[in-house]
Image: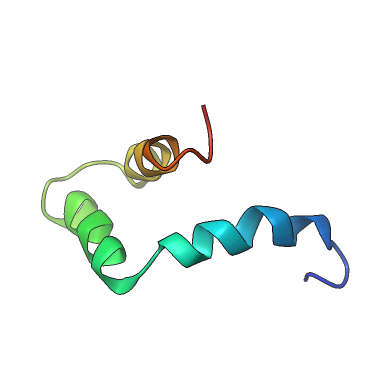
Length: 53
């Protein structure tokens, strides 16, 4: 994928560095147990970590 679209590396590498196991478990908990939508959980996490406004 990065060979075809090298600009995606700039986007995905910093995000993947922040998504450790502890974080992924917390996000999954919010969706699976607290019944939050995956979209809202992802959007909140991306905003809180400065990836989107």
